[in-house]
Length: 283
Image 1 (cartoon, rainbow, N blue to C red):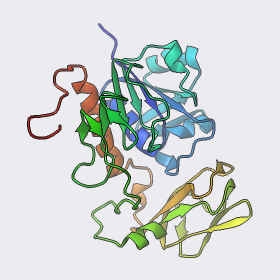
Image 2: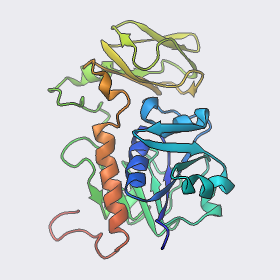
Image 3: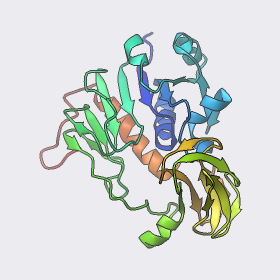
C-alpha cells in the first residue's frame, strides 16, 4: 500500500495550525517548521507551542518536536513532526509531495515553485504561477479560502479582521482597540495570560519597560509567550469581547476557511489539468 503524500507546512502559528490540522485529518503526513522563538498569539491552538513543550495537541491532533532523522518515527506514531528550522533546511534533506507556505508574513520569504511538485502559499506576497502553483485567499469576505490558480491574493487591507461568531458590524477603531501591539522593540514580559478577564486599561505586560495595556473589555483570547523578543508594533495578543471561553482552544473560523482552501488546492494539484482558471472566473 502506497504511503500518504508527505507535506511540508512552513509555520505552525494560528493559521498554519489550521492548515496542519486539516491536512493531517485528511490523511496527509505532515511535517511543520517553526522559529526557535515562535510569535504565535493564540498559543492554545498553535502547534508552535511544541517548540517549547516538546509536544502540543490541538483538537485531537498532536505535534511532536523532533529533528530530521526522527521524522519518520514521529509520523509513524500518527503525529505531526515539528522541526525548529528557520531556514527550511529540511527541503535539502527530504523530498515532499506538497509544500505550503503558511507563515502569513505578507511577503515571500524564499518559497519557490520548484521546491515540490505542488507548492501552495497563503495570503499576500505570492503570485500563483510564478512563486507557487496556487495561492489561497486570506482576506475576510466572500473570497476567504478561495484557491487562486493564476495571480496574487488580495493585498492586505491594513484593517483588523471582523469579529467572529456572528457579531454585528464594528468600527475599525473598535476592532483595532482589541488588538494588543508592542509599544517598542524589546522582550515581552507577560502579566496576564490567555483566558484572563480584562478591562480597558488593564496591565497585560511590558516591553522594554513600556507598559502594555488592554484597549477594550473582554477575554484575553491570545497573548504571545512570556520572554519572547518582539519588534515595535508586533502583535502581542487579542481580546475577545464576547466573553465566550469555548473559543479559546478552538481553531478559528478564518483559519478553517484558509485550511479548506489549502486542502482543496493540494488535492487539485494532484491532477494539474484541473487547477486552471475557469472560463469566466478563477476557481
